[in-house]
Image 1 (cartoon, helix red, strand yellow):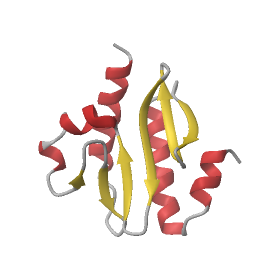
Image 2 (cartoon, helix red, strand yellow; image 1 turned 30 degrees about the horizontal axis):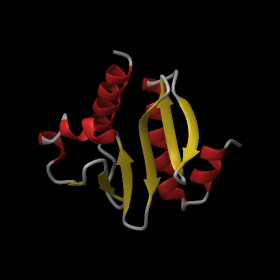
Image 3 (spheres, one colour; image 1 turned 180 degrees about the vertical axis):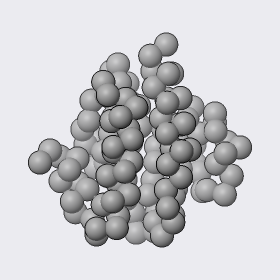
Image 4 (cartoon, helix red, strand yellow; image 1 turned 90 degrees about the vertical axis):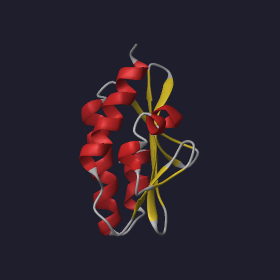
Amino acid sequence: MNEVEKYIDEFPKEVQEKLNELRKNILELAPNAQERICMRMPTYDLNGKWLVHFAAFKKHIGFYPQPEGIVAFQDKLKGYKTTKGTIQFPIDEPLPIELIREIIKYRVKEQTK
């Protein structure tokens, strides 16, 4: 079990499912990304730069696609709490996987220019 799997394993089953779904999509769309724990959260680096991070909290799952990943999808993120570098997905709602996949693809494209 690697350090990201250990991180995910610390949460209740329903949260683990969401975190594993995020992880699966990141690894599928960025197969060359390096997976590690940084700042106490799963982090994915591509070409030596941060691609995305995620973390579970009591009431939400934080997804960190860097500021560029939020600015580019501002319109589609209405209805979610965002900050300069974070999107908060409520823990008790399904993850918007198609939107997350779009953001990951965008970030991969940005990192491989």
